[in-house]
Each structure stands twice: as structure tokens, then as C-alpha cells.
Picture: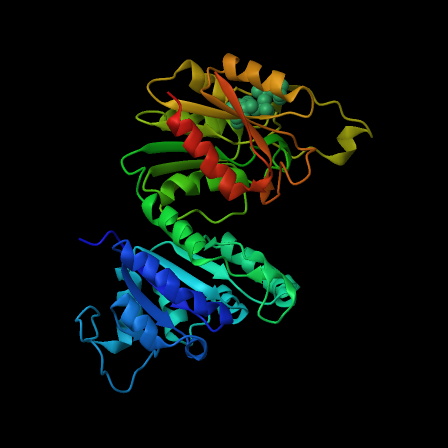
Length: 407
Ligand code: CTP
């Protein structure tokens, strides 16, 4: 019985010489390997070598003229025109290594003019890219943008390393050693469905409180952190409901999204979805203040007489309500603090009956609203984890793992 099905895509870069070693690692550990190469990859490493090591035929052509292989009957080639679909459905995880500038840029813009690209576009499994290129190419603005785009699109990216490059230069862009690719791929493969059967509720984004039909008070939350928190457990098999204020983000795959606008809308949606959860993570930047009067008609400029006094009152504290009505689930909230962060966060942890509070400071470089990164402290009843600056996607995994593991 094989432990898992791994598809490896090789594009044309010198780092391809490391792939035979990687294939050996997987095969020795009893994983089934299939390989797709681009034509230029065959200039760097021989398909015959890879075929022997993987014990499978290596696929290169999108429309092969003559089908000569299938000795092992491992690949369904009854219709070679749909190879890409079959392979995409077959794999549990798909690693593209090395991923060249050309392949990355084509994926980002949806080009599918070879078998590797077509298979990437039609796969349903997690896809990992290991970019490898020369230092100057790696630093090029277009390539940097495209690598970031890969992450945004939900693909995993193994960061290249610094060191000696094939050009003789030293710099960024070197593909990590086979052991690193091996561990990264297995991490993604093994955690894939570990949260199957769990039900998770996440809130994200800002809420709006209206002064009149065209004016409101809100905050700069973009929802990025909350959407990553919803994506992480969904990717791992959990059933996730995401209640979000107005944001400009795509719904993560398989997540049940509920859109709301005001704090009261969010409160009602939370109450409706409170039952049977295992974890609740309240990452929405709920607007604390609402105008005491919400005029049904648009206020006219003349009526302000140069100065307006608007009275505000507190909105309902949704998290506090959830904490008071805790039934069997573990609860996490956020604390956005500029001063006395740890002290204030600990107070909120207790007051709102939380298991975990995620503290961040909008004044920290790379943290808070709108960034793709965050720097947080995870505070719980008997400890604190100090997390360095990292991508919101990785922070989301840490929050999820911590909350899930708390007793
Ligand atoms: N929260 C909430 N309902 C509110 C305000 C906040 O559910 N009306 C939640 C947020 O989603 C977050 C946590 O409470 O998870 C803490 O929010 P934060 O704004 O840091 O703290 P507040 O409790 O609002 O207190 P303060 O503004 O005084 O710091």
C-alpha cells in the first residue's frame, strides 16, 4: 500500500539535477511518483533516469504522436488528450520544482501551452512551487510580483535560498536541497485532511455604522488575516463558515461565506451559526462605535452649518456575547493594542472568557491592517508565544494549531 500519490512537475532550469535525488527519497519512503517535464527540462536531466527512479513513465508532450509507453499500466492513456485532467485528479499533492520564471509567469496569467501548465490548471490537489533562478531574475520586479501572485492565488511557495548559483554569482534564487523539498511536500500532504469532521466559525473584515444612507464610520480592516484564518482549516478538511464585513477578497475554496455590513448584521449571523462549532475565531475588526441616530434620509450639507456634533454609542460586543454563551467550543479573539498590549490583552482574555487572544500592534512594521504579513503574540491562560514577522497565511496556521491544541 503506497503512502500517497505525488506528482512532480519539472521545468527547465539547472536545479532540475536535484530532482532524481528527491524522487529516490519519495520512492524509498513508499510514495508513488509520477513526473511531468517541460521540453526544456529534458536538456538538464534525462527523462530515462527519472523514469527508472520513479518506476513510471515520464510525460512530456501534450499531444504525443505515438504512444509507446504504458509498460506499467500505471497511467490511463486511453485518451491522451485528457492526460492532464487524469493526472490532476490522480495526485494528492503536486510539486513544481524547479519552477522557472517562465512557468511561474505563465501559471499566473493562465497560459496552458504545454502538458505541465495544462495539468497545473486542471489539478484539484494542493500545488507547491519551488522557484529557482538566477539572483537578478529572482529580484526582478515582474518575477517578484508573479511569485507573490502565486501565494495570493492559494498555491504554496517554497522560498529559494541564498548561496552559490549556477551562473557563478552568489545570491538569492537557489532551489533548496531535496530533503527540504521532501519535508515541505510531506507536511502539506499529511496535514491535508487532519481537521476533517471539525466545524469552525471565523469572522473577518470591518463592520460599518451608518450616520445616514451615504455616510458611515468604519476602520481600515481589509479582511486578509481573517480570510487566511478561514482558508487554513478548510484546506485541512474542516467545515468552515466565514462571516465577513465588506471586503474585496475572493472566498477561499470550500468556505461557506456570509456577507454582512453592520455590527448588528454580524451579531445576528454569529448567533445563527453558533451551534455545534469546535472552534470560533473572531478576527473581525468590529466597529466599536455607532451613531446614536441613523438618519433614513441623506443629511444635507446646509443642515450642518459648518459644524456637526454626532453622538456615538457602543455597539454590541459580539465576542463577549460568544464568551458568555460558550458551549463546548474553543474561542479565540484578537486584541489590537498600541499601548500596554500584553496587559490589555490578558484583561480581554479573561473578560471575554477566551481560550486564546491574538495580540497585534498596528504600529509594528509589517503588522496590522492591509499588510500581507503580521507580527503577533499568542496569549493563553498559562503562557504566551512570541511570533516573529511572517506571512498572514503562516500566522493563520499557528493560530489554528494553537487554539486546536489547547486543553
Ligand atoms: N469585538 C467584538 N465586538 C465588538 C468589538 C470587538 O466582537 N463590538 C471583538 C473583535 O473581533 C476582537 C476583540 O473583540 O476579536 C477585541 O477587539 P478590540 O477592538 O481589540 O477590543 P475592544 O474589546 O473593542 O476594546 P478596546 O477598543 O477598548 O481596546
